[in-house]
Image 1 (cartoon, rainbow, N blue to C red):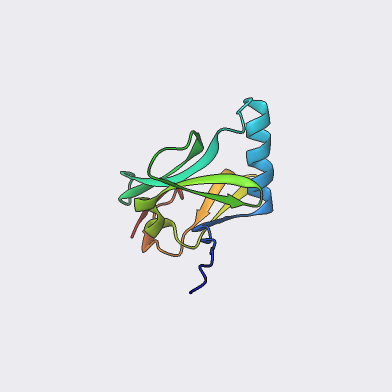
Image 2 (image 1 turned 120 degrees about the vertical axis):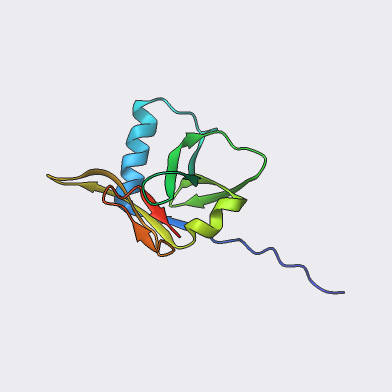
Length: 118
């Protein structure tokens, strides 16, 4: 009899500590329930072809659910290929404040950092 092993699938994205702190702050300030997870995805559009989706949402039927540094992350299965290996960071500087996306799958990005082509 063969033994069946449960293997966890690694999340396609990673979050920096700064991003986690910013997400926790937003969640608390907006009274977002623990039922919601952080939706990460892509949509057609933007100046380079795709734009990122980032926001709190309820789990949907086609979602894969991951826990990244204690944050529940929701990714539609069809979006994972565009996000594999992406790091989400929080930047706080004089010229830039907000989430940034470091996506190794992007062949081109725009100046605003929220649009890419693959």
